[in-house]
Length: 171
Image 1 (tube, one colour):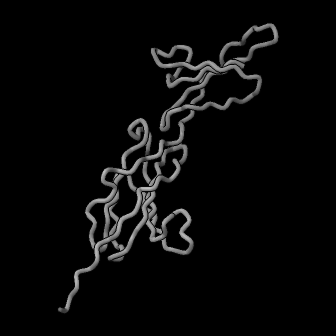
Image 2 (tube, helix red, strand yellow; image 1 turned 90 degrees about the vertical axis):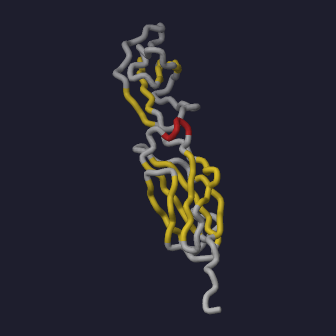
Image 3 (cartoon, one colour; image 1 turned 180 degrees about the vertical axis):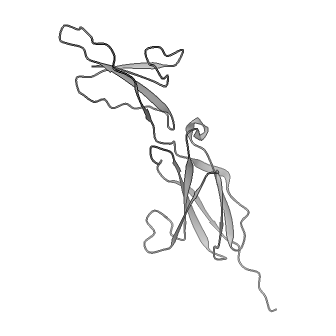
């Protein structure tokens, strides 16, 4: 089989887009070095033992998983007694194709494996999230992942920060 792959809707007529040609003896093909949040189009044709090819089948497309976001600089702003704002940057392609982000917040050092600690999970359409309702003078750990129509990236750690201590009263 000969497989054409490209970001162009018709890999046979790519109009300047890069086209990759792959040959396989299998009825499947695994590709690598693809950009996250990108739609790729594929066309395939059979080639017989005499090297005579068939016509290419109609193109099919697939959206790759989103590229993982990265911690913002700074990752935490507006740190208060009961809230923190976490920020991050979109992954490759500037996050094109990303539909939302899922943020995990926990007092456990790994919010994905909290070992009994509470974990808050929020979905946002922005590259920042304010997390009200936190306890004062407590360290929180944050992770974020990007989501698109195909699935989700791996979680990326934004690190940790401590909420502010409450001001003493009654003195």
